[in-house]
Length: 211
Image (cartoon, rainbow, N blue to C red; front, side):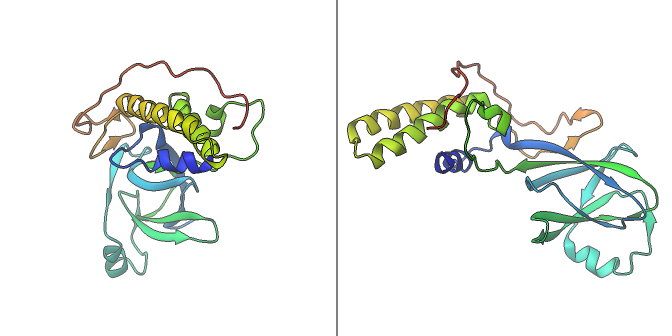
């Protein structure tokens, strides 16, 4: 099932709306300017200073290194940059500028990682971060792989065709969003959404057992 999940998540040409999440970050003068992000956040899109109600500008890492080595400048953060991967905490780390001089709340948007499924019984995939609308494709592809392993090629081919149809339906229902620029205090910036298409579709019932 995890193989099928990864194929769907990395489906070429589609950025899945169900992977998009908004996280909160508390910054303080005591903690300085460097912070770890949520371990599920992979591709960070934007930062918003909720306390000051303003968007934060993404700047190159080199700018921080050249101009802010001593961290003397303090105030309300209005800029951010990715510092790199923190292998200790298995998460991305960021630096905000200027260094906070008070406690403030920042929210950031990111495309997130769906953790691998483990032993699941009497539970739905939604509880594990997998949306209901994506269940048909996941189950069809998982069944196909199992049948192929058992040498049941004809049945596997039938599941492959069903999987392709499920992926087409999932792609149609997906929100096609490009150049995201979020005002997390007021909602979506009107210029952020280039094209949004949401089609209704029947997705079937809950998953109660692991295939």
